[in-house]
Every structure is written in C-alpha cells, then in structure tokens.
Image (cartoon, rainbow, N blue to C red; front, side):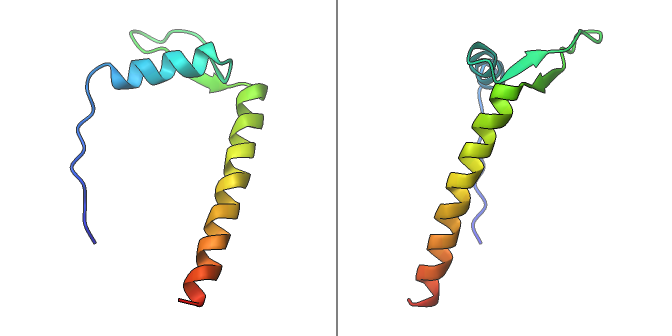
Length: 69
C-alpha cells in the first residue's frame, strides 16, 4: 500500500471552515481561549447525509464490479 505525504498550507483548514460556515453547514458555538469550536447545522447534516448516500452507492457499485473482474 502506498502512503502519500500530503502537506496542506496554513490557510487550508481556515478556508475550508469559512466555506462550510458560508454555506450554512456549520456554526460556531462559542470561543474557548483561541479555539473556536463549531457544530454541524441541520442543513449541514442533510447535505452530509446526501453525500454519504451517494458515496455508499459508489462503493457498492465498485464492490459489485470487482467481484466480476
């Protein structure tokens, strides 16, 4: 198995958090020192469920096809 050494830039996490918050999928729940915790919103949960259902379909299709390969 190959392991990838991926290095993310310093703005990667904050950019992702900003996009998730702008889309209404997460919201801050209060500051704790320098940290700002977030929780998933109802819209975020719905979006995540949709994506997981789609990924489940892809995985099941791949497994079926691998059995016949």
